[in-house]
Every structure is written in structure tokens, then in C-alpha cells.
Length: 387
Image (cartoon, rainbow, N blue to C red; front, side, top):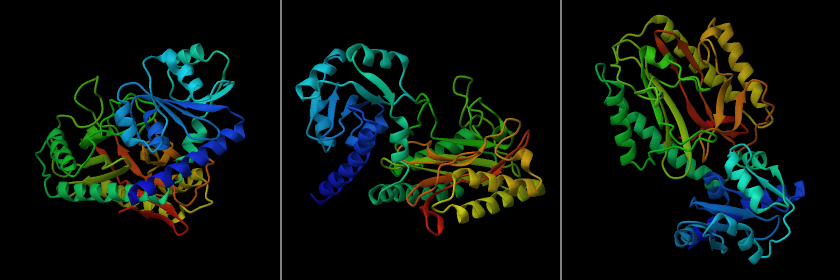
């Protein structure tokens, strides 16, 4: 009962903040469909459309399992939906009839879905509300931080476990199976949510030697080679050789909230230049976390990291090779790529309670990659590890 009260207060807080943004925009409501957004505002990720008015309780229009949605959500208005054309009828039943300005998540909506929204609500003028939602989710509440710390603690345990199991001679796939099996035994969801991409995203990368420097056409520093051109990310069949870097980069989802972590292992005496690059990455991480305080612009932290890489003579290897990723970290939460992005020119001002993964890495073509990644919460004293 006490947990239910805490959750109700948490969702009331989120709803009030979002509705304040709707009112400020002069919108008659927002119609949301993205699972993470529906969960954030309603506590369920059933296939549904969530209508949020500028005042009053939201309405959840559910296709498949209204009974389960009622069990999971804190709101009373859960309405079965037999078809798309029923949306305006069910909203009208609840008193939402004259909807002339509506918001939706235009950063991820498909043309087909948007066309259907316009078809069934022809009088409405549609506006992008995704920025308001994403900025709202940047700052985590105490309830969210508790969930993130739980995920971080479990994920740290997985990395401690895998250090005792990996040895040169194992394939990337064998290492991934060992890691993922143990993670699942601790409650890992076995998938991650990534905004804007199809959900074929792997939960992590195991990349031995040159495979860590192998690109897959994604805007990330490292992807691994994967097992085929259709699945060009994550672990492949390469065997880890002693002395070459083994990079393990995995997202942890133990519950609803994600953390991100990377470790690098050598399994023997490492080459001197790669070991030096690893030390520089650690120095960059220490410097960035020290400066990641409320009031600092996200882009300033990227600039700080880049200068340190330049001073070390490693700029051409920093965050990629050839086409380099212009960021040093990113927000995490319900999705792996939340705001803020600690990237070049990003003017987002850090605030207490933001949760960010900081990941300085160096890539050496034909040889591999080194670096690290941990997940932190922004505090007045700088970024602090969640676990």
C-alpha cells in the first residue's frame, strides 16, 4: 500500500510537470504512442495511445489487454480500443471533443501513424511535443534514482563476474553468452530501449582486437562486427588473443531503468601505446566527472575531454577513427540515448539529478579500442557513480 502511494505521488509529479508544458504551449492535449513515454506518464507499456489533457487525468486507449493495463497504471481512465477510428469517439466520451491543437512525438512517429492521426482528428493542428518530454525526463526523481542504483549495482556485479571467467582463446560469442547468461540470472531484461531505432539493438558489444575498431554505419564510437551484415553489431566469432584489447560494452536493464558500462581487458602484457591511451581515457573520465556540475553546459565537457586528448597526442583516435563521434557521454534512463548529450556545441545546462554515462574511448584501426564507461548522477560536487 505504501509503495502504491509513492508511485501515485511520483506519477502525479510527472503529469503536473508535463501538463505545465502543454499549457505553456497552448495545446489542447498530447497524444502519445512511444512505449517509454507511455510508461513514464502512465506506468504501463501496453500497446496503447495515451491522451494527456492540459488539466485532469490522462486517458489510456488500450488495444490488446485493458485488464493488465488497469493493473499496471495508476490512472482510472483505461478504455478498450477496438480500432483506430474509435480514438476520437472514446475521447469524446470522456469530454475531450474540441481538440484543435495537439502535440505528439514527431521525432519518432512514422508517416503512416501520423497520417492516421490526422485522418481521425482532421480539425487538429499538430505540433512536436518530443522535446518537452525528453527534457522533462532528463532530471531523475528519488524514485528513479533508486531504480537506477539498483540497475547499476546489479550490472557492476555482472562485470565483476565476467572478469573471473574470461580468458584468451574464448570467442567473442562465448564471452557474450557467459556475460548475458549471468546478467539474465540477476534479472536483466534481455533487451534495451533505444529511441529512434528499430528494436534490433543488441544489449551490448564484445569486441576482441581489431573488431572493436570495425564500423557498422551507426553514429556510435564502437559497434563490434556482429555475426552477419543484417546483424552488424555486437559479438562475432573472433577469438580473443592474449595481449590484444577485449572491449566489453553493455547496457544494464535490471528493472525499468538502464545504465551503461564498458570495461577493457588484455589477458596478458598490453602494448605500451594502448596502455597509455587507456590511462589517458581514465584521466579524461576523472576530469569530466569532476567538472560535471549543475550550471555547466554539456558541450563544455566534450570540449574539455577533446583538449585533454589533443594534449596527449591522441586526438585522431578519440571517440572513433576517421568519422569520429562528437560526444563524450549521454543521458540514460528508460532509454539508452536520453538527453543530455555531452557533445560538441550542446548548450544543455546540467542540473542536479541528471544521469549520464561518460565514455572516453580511443580507437586504433586494425588493433582495437581502449577506454571505459560508467554511469553517474550529477551532484553539486560533480558527477558521482551510481554504484
